[in-house]
Length: 97
Image 1 (cartoon, rainbow, N blue to C red):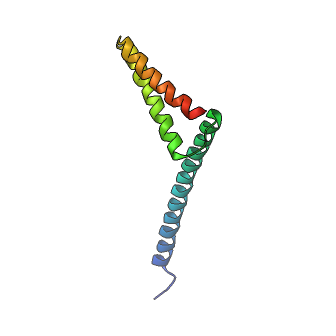
Image 2: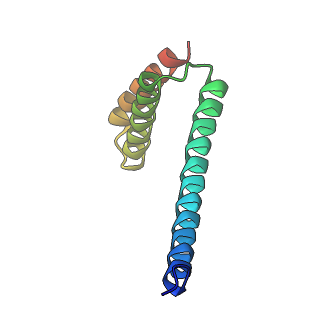
Image 3: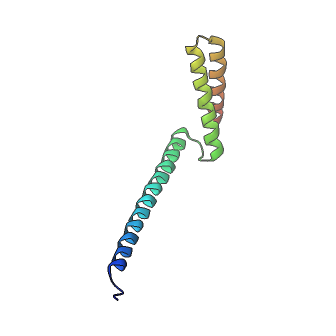
């Protein structure tokens, strides 16, 4: 019997394929992580805020309030639109100072 026969070759090829697949996914997800990090750094740098989770949550809340205000204006609710928009602007201005 040969020890370096067909099954040894087959095992090496399957191992190489699995290794290439793992490296591909590792590089892909590392690239996504770097892109997210750079996006948050650029966003916080342009707004002049620190890159903390709390600041990003407050930013999202402020933007959601602004969107709700705009939707109220579209729905012809002037008072609701003014209130939601002012709340969103208040939160965002508090964040950026």
